[in-house]
Length: 471
Image (cartoon, rainbow, N blue to C red; front, side, top):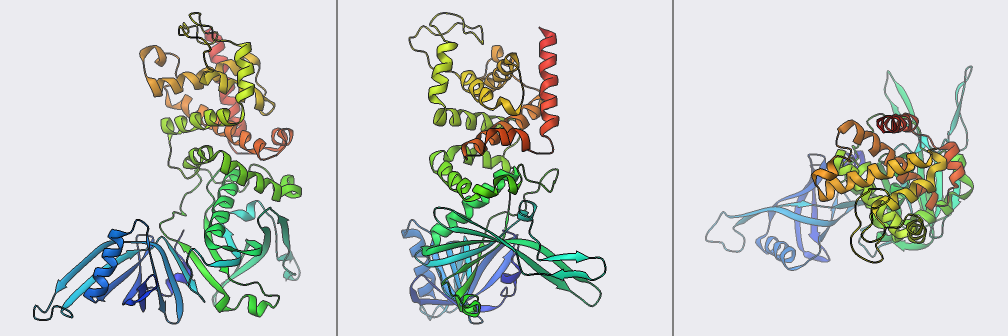
């Protein structure tokens, strides 16, 4: 996550901390901000505390939790490591107290507020600000009048139910003011409300998977700006939002700086296309994650910009094969009956001799061909086009996986062609995912939008025309 303005007020202030449930290991330390992450630095630990912390880290397989207070605020530093430590004996005659010990703690998660947090803590709701979500859900807590300026109104909200929680989108307004400038910023807050309290690890999972879901709808990484965890639900707002009932939650060592190469304030589908069954769509996304996790993990590497060019192509090709293996086995079997691979005979799509084996399995080509036919309402290719595109993907995948000069002749080895086919494969995969989430394929074909969608299809058609002219 980005630098946390609420956490910054506690930086460089000394507090009292201890490890886990053992308050005998207390030490004084201060929070520091370094290279976009928060650390806890202790300079005056007793040798007893110092050794106990390091021994515990060595002996236990899991991360450490630290707790403490800074200016009366409870701090929980979870999933922490101690990468740096040192001890110096400043008084050789005093083996117990003559030590100066230093540790540097890197917490994976920081919760701070009115109560301490661990994996067993239960909460009734969480309040999350996702980046760019106002581009999907258009809610305004005011209207603008030329004569009267801003006219504020009651905060509108949208509610939808999932199997595990109620999702509430609220319009919010932040204010920054100085003598010379007054600035209001509109944003949408996302509330995860639970009828029965859930443990914090479950709430974290819901937030993370919903973040991935929004990223898939945007076809670009959606960051987290802030998270609040609320312990109890009260009808009285004063109790509900009291400082003792809320902790702010910060994910350390998590980037929020992934930027779109060409920022466009739009999602691939509009909220009004999904609003009537938005909760069901999220339920389907959770089921898709649990049944086809490798597809999401391979695709998400691209959305967070950790996969480029050839690696991106291989990630996408592998994700498409996983999709086929998981959801289209019977359809591919039927296709193989129509386009069989007979032992010792030339393969219909490659022209190469098939191995001398019975019951030859489907190839990458069969799987990609089937997926292209399934989604062709969105692309409008003819049968020969689909065969050629399937061959491009299969041959290029085989070249970079198995290599060989004979494979190179058919592979897309120039960067411009790979960029085009990579963009096309991203659209193919995201359309397949949308269809699996229960979004009607006709709706996708009619309403799907992305700035490079039409130009990519045009470039693919130009490559196809060039291929046909060669023949």
